[in-house]
Image (cartoon, rainbow, N blue to C red; front, side, top):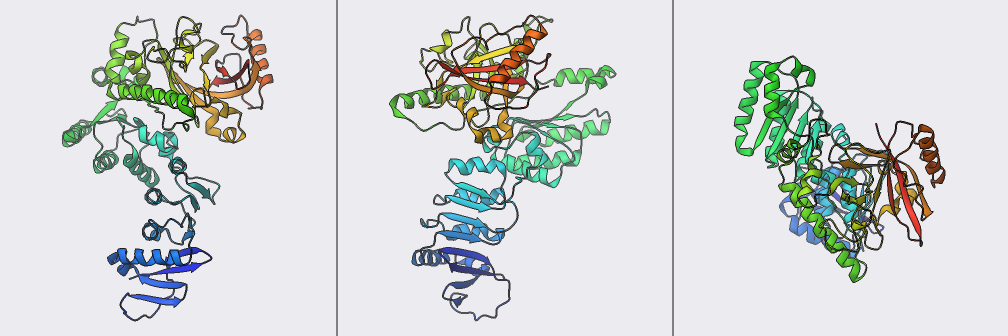
Length: 522
């Protein structure tokens, strides 16, 4: 039996284990008053009489005007948070242990609607987004936020990315940190469809499947990228698939090209099991506060369209769709490979790609018309709409990217739709986060990452909208001009062979443009 010490000092309630053994009498409450401001309960008594203890602690909080909760041992965190539940005066929690908060403790904190400040050594980085949404300020005493290789390699540093992620890669053998974070991922995620493993390992695969079953995740394909050839392994895979058939969890093999060239039988297997590439789904997870009736309608319409897009993506069998679309494409033409982009062609056949920028509301399919005017007044559903849509310059091509691919959208900074949050690139705080300086612009044919190298405002001009170049010297002079205009030096090299993307929108000043240039990462 452990003793739980409840101390009160300077408007703070401290909860910890009693370190020094104490001889006590078995009185009515199994409680000892050490001083006027200290009490001890046995953990057994608290667990058996939680309602009474909560009521008692609530009276203490009111009597001593308690503002803060100090938890010395993380093991007591869930109990301590229960004790202050519904106490409106307690607004801050301080975790004294020098270790990272668990996902379960973070979830427990989020159930208390009165907490506004959490101070701890560190916490899972993806939980910070959840705390921000709840209006909880987080204070970390550690300069390093630990993330497992699993979370880092799959770019699962935000709660929303974990929630919507459809495909992940796992390196075997699994380390404990990877396994623990995969369990957390499965607790949060609602859209997982594919898991890619770097090699075959029966025991590790069974661990992964058990976690999926524990969290009741179904309809998942596990792709094993390994050149196995033993009949015993094939038999084991069949047994695993049969055993998990009712859970709709299927294990399939993906062989390397070199192996296939030397194994005709394996080539046949690969043709049967061939699956299109990874589908990545980015959904908008937050919207700016409504500002006025017109902004409310703009946000509502934007949300409605995005919901339709997300529903379409979720319901589309991207593998089947991509295969069908590629049937009509000539052999010498690029093949469609980005399933989640292709899936929205049924809504708008002029879809060319998808752009997503960290720490902004920019998460849109990109369209292209025969001119640069149509999508200034029409949305993704081809309806008349003053908010327009995000569109690519009519001169550009996504089959073979030009030297300069240009993307436009209105700057609806009052309601945050379209490029309404692009001006965040001007903020020092935004630029201080390294992950913000790289964004994705995927096309129907491939997935691309782009690194920002120039940001500036300029009076309405077309000199930065040049698409093709007649010589290397002309290209380098053009890049030099873009870098010279930049408000800050990003120290990013752009060479002769590189290609860039340009984002252009209206700035808040009259007849001024906000421009962002980024280079394609190799």
